[in-house]
Length: 502
Image (cartoon, rainbow, N blue to C red; front, side, top):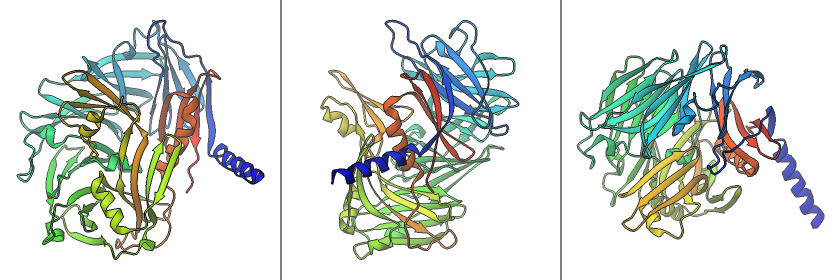
């Protein structure tokens, strides 16, 4: 028995060892200033045309700028004179993305004042002249509420909400390094309980069209989907019609549409909850109540209902492409429990943060994931007050503020007696989910087992490697997944390619 267990451990270890390939190693020793918190970080930006990239390695004393080619090989490097003095790192900054063209790289950083985002700075990196320059990109007015920032196929956008005129303010940066501002008027539907646009868009999550998202993004009731030339925002509130706002990122014209689900729930008792996902120009809506689970497929352009699937207590679980499970993940430790009863499944989903998401597998089939995703606190001091206010829907309640940094969420509860801070990590969560497989042409169910999830594989890898990693970044280039980190024992910065199972 001991020999068999040892063999199993060796096989598992071998499997992990061959699940990544080291593509870059750079000797460096990160240093800190005495009596100051450790401030080690790395930032990465790729030029989609040349496939060259800039890797920035920063500690408390210095910043090094490395130019890498498409094969992750070092081309050149430099450090600005004056250590951090002439860089954006002399301020309270957070890297949020950027763009690149013609050999120059434009890194965008949010700048905070009094722990509140006040605007953005642009750092231009020119590896040919080995220079770095900084300028204020834009400053938010006192009427604007900061939303989300993201790169968009050669552009970079910061979405801010101006409640006074009820507009989205799009602060943009193009690939030439020029910035602009556009305004988009949005009408809050009469059925909404929200009065201000900032409340209506609260909890906005960003999803890139050509990437497989995780359930943590899909649980958001307000989602922004972006693809070349187009941005779409979808809003769900209880069982109200799904609100779609389409924005053309070339002309910045917009259109709005409401897709009503009431015909599917007519005559049913109780409240239904709707969560939607935009995929391949169709809207996939999860309609959940205490009796059944429905998935409705609509043409997002005209609202035509294309297909519906219903899961109830008569449903055969063998038709699922991924059996229902409840997973609790604590870093690299996971505990899974099978769910073999549809009634129990519906009850669990009805209590959690419901979500639906899709991706296309290597055979062109649509993999539909339905489930819940709830972050678990790493430290709370036994503060149940926080848990009750940071709800399973991922929204902050009164007196609660949420800040995201990488894959961590810092939630602060302001109480009359003292503030409490709790840290949530994307690798510490509880989730119940199942998978279906759709034919991309008619949306009929396909029997079979779904291919492994990209996100799950990345999480498994990151959970294992994070034990020795600092200054971590995870990114994708040309369809390949990479993870960069500093190994303090080896005094080496490394980039590994995560080998994804198909």
